[in-house]
Length: 531
Image (cartoon, rainbow, N blue to C red; front, side, top):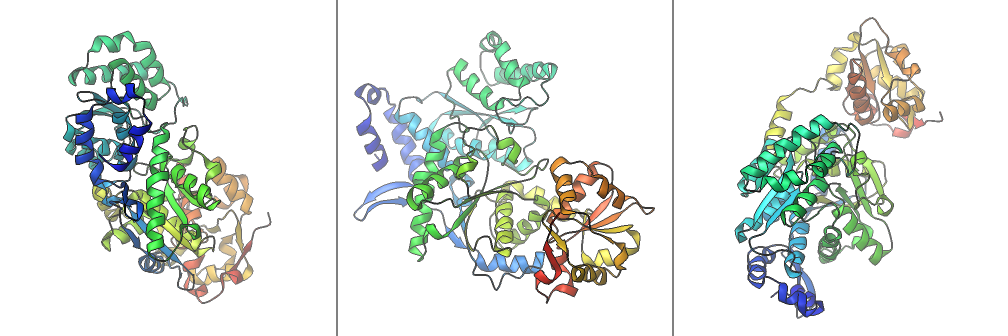
């Protein structure tokens, strides 16, 4: 029996101890718990064992910044470690809360041999629960058909019973953007059929049809999983609401990182942690640990912008409303464009690093923060690896992204643009900056438009085209080139304009990538916008 189990059992009342399935507990600890990070007591005290690697990524991130994004980070006092939870059993960080929650459920008598575990998942948590099939437990995952093919494949490989839904698992509970009663009825019929095929009694489903259709009309798949568990006597881990999700990262993950940094002569107190948002367990647990031990906020949370689908994580608007989303505890929140970060993903994977899509967003965010001096020392949570997303990555490599072009392409096509438009929400080019853009592209300065920063802010915030910008976009050739600091803001603007039927292109790397200004201080070329 493990050290944690002994401590926990000592606090349980005799009635609860007697309800524990000790055979299941023993098998769980031998076959799963013993192979994942957990606390054990030895002569020197309590220590995390089975820790995942903490790898120095500083050199490769600097190389990527220089080669792909034309950013020179050599003069920055930069240190970046990757916490490679892609090495965990089942291949992702989600095994940590899954094991923590299941261990607690067995210890408290909530889960016994022969029971079915049912949960809503965007992939990794379901794959982690698949480990329970080794113990003879059945796992049913409610998933969205938006999942990538590789994620479905891994779910099937873990002997998980999959229920495909036509609805997204990601909307927050109770979200009612487009309640559709007819769609809810059709989905309910589909679920009933799948449950029957999995051996569940459909008459139990029929007795609760009104509650089920109500949940489906609200796109509330998270609470649907809980409800199905209730009416069929299954166990639902409730990962989106369960404080044990947060506790797993506070009591193990954070302690593990702190322990490893100390071994390398550093302290977590001096590092920012960058993670993405799936359920809020990782960001919440790490934030709680750092707040209690070091009395500071150090966790930076990244999201893809609204409308972008990045495997396994939520956009910021879909995090709102979740119980474990606690923005007041974070050091910062950032929306990071995956169209930019995917170049980093490809670079790191080709260098042999096993990182997934969310990790690329985090590394790209850290690179930008370092470039602008916001932080100097980072731990990046590498939540999973590339295996599930390989096909997607291969397709990315094949596609030529016409919305984003290189300087060489822009110069070649300079005569095809009506206008060269500067787009940024905080900075505007000085006269010297305008000259650098004009000379680099081989155009006259009169072809360059500089809308007010608030105009661009309005475009990104409202997804509507302000009149000032609309005037700049009118031309006989029907296409404009957008230029910003490093290519991120301009690409977001291109995507918004494309949704309105307006053709524009983004200059990859922005003004920081132009050879005419490469040896000059950026402050000579741009200034903070005043309007």
